[in-house]
Image 1 (spheres, rainbow, N blue to C red):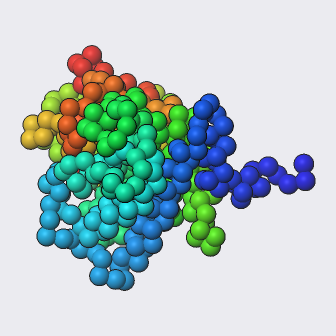
Image 2 (cartoon, rainbow, N blue to C red):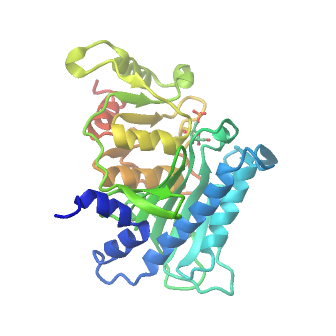
Image 3 (cartoon, helix red, strand yellow):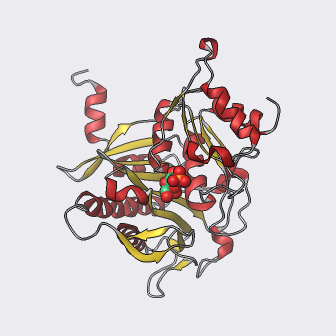
Length: 341
Ligand code: P6P
């Protein structure tokens, strides 16, 4: 062949073309879905533009608000939340949205058509790291509505993660990445800012069956249940035959820690503890979309006892513990937590 296929494909495999070609894999796909994902990629670029100049303009720092989860709301949190909502509210394919930054549902303005999808998102995860210029990201989850028509309801939103139609995340780091899945594997795109296009850089990401990295905030060690403490001590023991000790990596930005786990393998844990029995991370717009992505890449995600994607949500901002990563690592964690080890 005149040109090596990879060189040409990545240069011309834009996110838009990938979504379009993926559409052909979905019988009966109407193109609504593609326009939805395209709208999200536009919103991501608008957020990226502010994130990259955050240090230069007065958009760093915190507002005087805390959100539903008790986190201090950063100015960029607010900007990202509003940007995603306004980029998506008029596309005509959504019946309702929900976001970490808003207690209640985000309804579609009356004047715009209501579509058959639901968007749930964390506009800027890891925002505690913004002022330190550490990688942060946006996380999104898309469901098909359950109600027939009109204004979307909580019933349309509170669906188990296994019902997701698509999920993904955006990384605002050393480069900007858009990682998504519609159930046909996981694909990563890197923004080429010179042309403003997301180009395919990570086609069909597969997570290693087992890794040698654990990612957890060990500052909470003394609050953990003994089984969780035993699990971590096991990973730190010297045993070449089982490739231990593992290395510790913790960025403190969920989307960055999970992305590294997706590429390198290993496990990210945010366990419950005696102060916060359900941990810190939210099911609907953090754990579910990331669990969908990691499972699509051949990994696993559990709350320590149950598959994340099988959890029936009760409330919009509910938290669950999270153990996510290589399938063998998540299984081992569950064995410790269930007392089998
Ligand atoms: P801790 C950021 O606020 C976040 O929700 C995740 O991005 C991150 O992984 C986690 O909290 C860090 O929490 O308790 O380790 O500081």
